[in-house]
Image 1 (tube, rainbow, N blue to C red):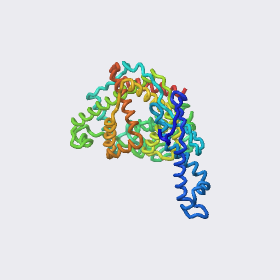
Image 2 (cartoon, one colour):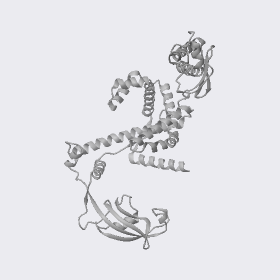
Image 3 (cartoon, helix red, strand yellow):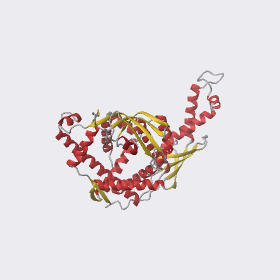
Image 4 (tube, rainbow, N blue to C red):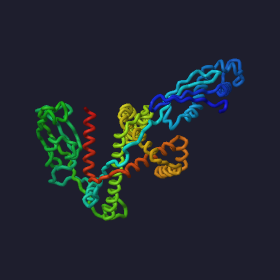
Amino acid sequence: MSAESITVSVESTGPVTRQLSVEVPEQRVGALRNEIVSEFRRHARIPGFRPGKAPLPVVEKNYQGEIRQNLVERLIRETIGEAVEQVEGRVLNVVDIQPDEATDAGFRYVATVEVPPEVAPKGYKKLKLQRPVGEVGDEQVDRVIDDLRERYAAWRDAAEGETAAEGDRVKLTYTAYDGDEPLEDGHVEGYEAQVGAGQLHPKFEDGIIGATAGQDLEFTIEFGEDDAPSDALKNRTVRFVVHVDELKKKELPEADDAFAAQLIPDTDLAGLRARIADDLRAAHQREADAALRDQAVEQLLEKHEVDLPEGAVRQRQESIARDSASRLVQQGYPAEAVKGLLPMMFEDARGRAENEMRAAFVLSAIADAEGIEVSDEDVEAELRQQAEAMGQPAEQILARARSEGHFEDLRSSLRNQRALDLVISEASVKDIPLEKYREQMEKRQQEAAAAQQE
């Protein structure tokens, strides 16, 4: 050990915390102090001395507080990495540092770090999983083509004698009356809606179905306690005077070769159907893979109690909340409004963050038990794939990953993924119809939502 080596003692203070007592020798403190004082001297403005010419003791006296603060900050910054290396295993993060005064006798500080919990993996072999299997046939392909026809539908003015029906678009000007008196804010001009799409009150829709373009209508609606569109209209009878400004009918394109070529150039209807079938199979496979992963993780968490490091969980919460906020901004929501939602997003992310951290620790323990490793070449290959997907130079992505610490994070992620793949490969898997699986998931989500409201 050299004269400038730090001394570190490590004490376990809990399942996921360690306390590091760090001592920096006087030689190292003195050398850094002299370096900092010399740096201050070059820029010091002291009456009676030219810049850079003031004696060092004078500089130290005039900038005593700033020099002391700079010295403590740099001593910690330059030695914390060395100190953390003395902790057995992986350190997740540094959560607190309490420095003492830096003196001629050296410098001491106490750092609290978080480490992964000890997890003894159990019961991870022969899990019972359900794999949703979706059918892909003419019926499923027809359904997609019908959706595409709806999406590419054209709208035309209704011909003479054609009447409003479900699925049509209408433009309406109307006035609502209580007896002969117009209701406050009861006059609306040029209101556009699609009949049957939930954009109009059902009783109002009943009044306009069968109407023609340009027709004047008058009908009365009795609103009850539960079906009124506003509190002001509860248990009231309202008379509506309506003019149908416009009535438009939907025209669906024919499902033929021309329609197929409109969607995918140089493709006929048979080619479109084949492409849709392939896409459906790929989507079903992705859904099946995700279902197996979700079920496996859920069962693993049920079998393991895991102590969670609070600082690491909060970091994950913040990351989830920031990602959610970024997506909202990208979707066009005002940045200031989204910023105001961040505290709520942070709290909402707590459960997800805890589950993700628990799963990561359990899978890491399984990887340890099974001797799963991920080489540098594996990590580099994954980063190169990411670079290609983003259209960025691979070497730039690799360099950034190493400098910012993402390289080892990705190694851990890939290692955990391999552990999960192993768990699934050794599970007992039963195929069930995709629709049945979706019904099960929807029911569980509804039950979970109801439980949260209680």
